[in-house]
Length: 59
Image (cartoon, one colour):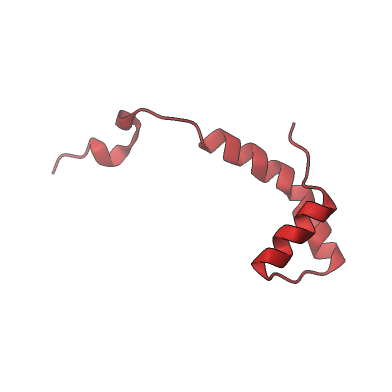
């Protein structure tokens, strides 16, 4: 299972993006970062060209 981002890394990412959060908001989003990492790993899987619906459309 992925771990949430550390507070230091999370704060750096938010500062770089210019996002200001309260402590409660930051902790809620930081806790969800583990789920986002798992989701990103699941969708960033190499897929064959045939998996793309736009390549099989025939007007």
